[in-house]
Amino acid sequence: MKPKYLFPKDYMADPSANVFNGRLYIYPSHDWDAGECFDDDGGHFQMKDYHVLSWDDVENDDATDHGVILDVKDVAWAEKQMWDNDCVEKDGKYYLIFSAKGYDGVFRLGVAVADNPYGPFRYQGVILEPVVGWTTHHSIVEYKGQWYLCYHDCVPSNDITHLRSLKIQRLFYNEDGTIQKVVNE
Image (tube, rainbow, N blue to C red; front, side, top):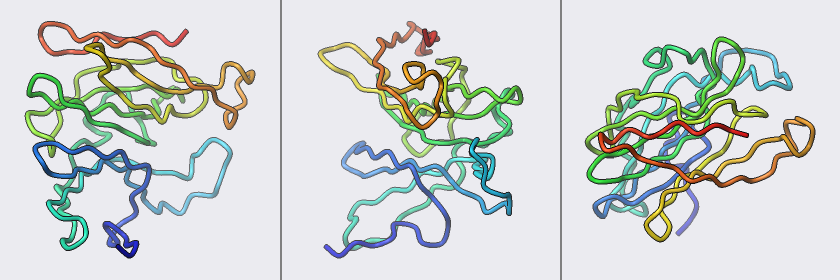
């Protein structure tokens, strides 16, 4: 297969990919050209929402864009920079774990839930704070019956944001399907 742009009509990056019910879903960040100058804090990245793209046949079909599945205005603490995200399924619910920058300048990981992999997702709460060093580029995985959050921060490098180390932490779901908050120590 010759490489191709999955959705050339818009700017999307930082993909996580999953197969749910035999269909490929890609959850990218959504870049907006806001005309901001480059800075070391990523302020020129103006991601303000997430979309999900899906296919039955990647090689022969165009992507289906399911539209906005979560917007920054749906998350009271989030101001901007909705960066990388990941989606997992547990017990028939789909959990979108996302990173965003708050009005206080601190990144957090939030979670939103939907009844299907293409949303729309309903904001549920924060699951990790603080995020040290921009964002986490995280993923969630089930391994031997337990759930884990894999992410990185820059604590070992004395908070040099581009020198990050990987962390893994156990994740717990409550009986009502919500995820317990994790403290980044």
